Image (cartoon, rainbow, N blue to C red; front, side):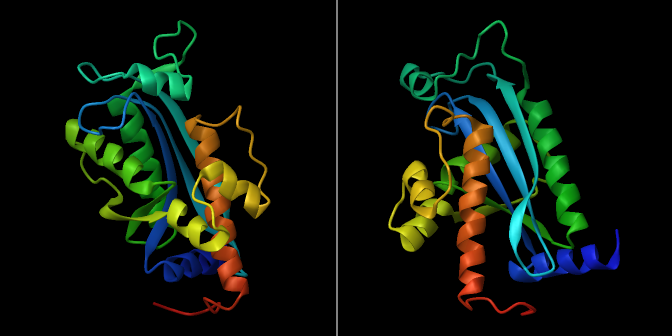
Length: 215
């Protein structure tokens, strides 16, 4: 890593008080994190350039085999369009997927001189609840995410654009959004990341966070 990259990583650490924002989207078999299965998860690592502009750096995505004993609500499956038992569906066990994602996030936290990750999501407490439930279910050590704090783009886009639905917020922000692709964890996570980055970058352009400001 060269000196410029090191400086950019310190800029990111200072910007969010040593927290690394990681955008997460989860598709599930219901709305209860304690009883309903996770079907897909995606995590987007963000980076910052020398001008303090936030952008997408890396995306992790995988389909998950529904954990035995957890529920799959028909209405939820119809909403997402996911068939958990499709013969061509490539999926991995929940524990394996979560361990891999946690490792990737921990590596990014360390590389960017941060102390912990903070989850960014659209209605973020929904995704954080499922992340925490899976972590507890498998007794996973060193969950990299803050246990209860998060950045919610539904709230932020309500403030910035007067819209709280992801598709409408993206459209208002000038971000392309394909409703036929929606409710895929990868697609929704990347669109949420674009939305979050635009809000943060616009706020900086307006003078809300002077470049070089430290914690």
